[in-house]
Image (cartoon, rainbow, N blue to C red; front, side, top):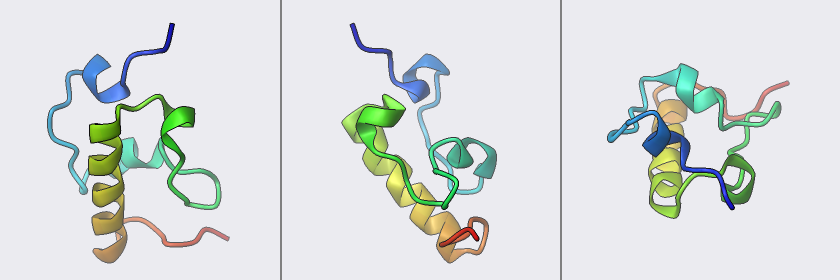
Length: 67
C-alpha cells in the first residue's frame, strides 16, 4: 500500500512557487528536485511541483545549486 500524495493529504490544490517552505521539502541537500517514487507525490502534482520549483529558482527564491 503506497502513501497518499502530500498535496492531497494536506488539501493543497495550487502549488505556489512563492511558498518556498513547502518546495524545500521536495529538494535534496544539493537543491535538486527529488523523484516521484521518493516523495510519494502523484504524477500530476510532481509536474506542478517541478514547474513551481523552476519558477522559484528563476525568481531567485530557491537556489539552482547548493554548496
